[in-house]
Image (cartoon, rainbow, N blue to C red):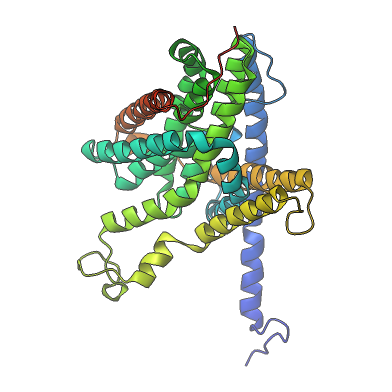
Length: 412
């Protein structure tokens, strides 16, 4: 009879198997992390070149995110060179555990206190824009016979915060990697078009700086794309207030991610027809849903961690606003730097970047041809982007008409 290891409590064979599994994920994780790092470098070069072609000073920050580049590069590598079996365990780990850890860290970027203080005037417009995008894209996606999960991913990416929303939502609704790739492609294509066109359109449509900033913050998909558009507007039209307002409005949109993930998870669960766990979750029996099971599906641990991280950020900000230190230890700038390090560098770049590189390495470009969806996802995505932009413009006009939005003339 085999002797148990005193420290682990496992038989030697089981302990060895666990060690093998732990080491087995290393090659795939390293490959995904290396691809992530290369992708951010490529995105920086391409983004800087894009700004220079417009005659703008890039200011050291690229308007392109490395995450969609990682997905596209990974899919290209998988399609042209194939994927070694030795990489598969680590890539699976990257697209599950590392992805969830990244989502939790991204919660550090969300501060309800900062939203209320800086962007309260734009909150009604944010709610209108998000609601219009979510409702329209899901309804139009159903009309176009897209898979419900794909419609939800496109809706979240278009309405809230681009690739980050897609990455955060996908595990909550059990989306396939093909669906994630389609949704990310929508963000890349239509978010980039908005980034290039909307600064000039906004100057033509709106008279006041705050109106321009709120429109840009509402109408463009990804945070990096919004900031690039705002930078373009500031460089071309010399309007720093519009740039700051765009950043604040985008932050306000991002905060709503904490509410949208469990809502769409519930929506996905309802559409799947899952009933009480006693019937095996087959969906054949349309009985009442067990509420404990429903809560666990709508609020998985990583979503609760994401919300908890956002709450911790908010509490720390409130402590500082009252003249103290965040949790009795961090000064204002130290707390802000820590939140940015966790939310942007660790969560948004390293963890989510590695996870999305894994998604790319797991996606063959042939799946787009074999999926039978054709251009329908892009018809839904493009129309959804137009609806969100139009709602944003109308909301800005409404805020101005009713005197909710403070106004300052654009600089000549």
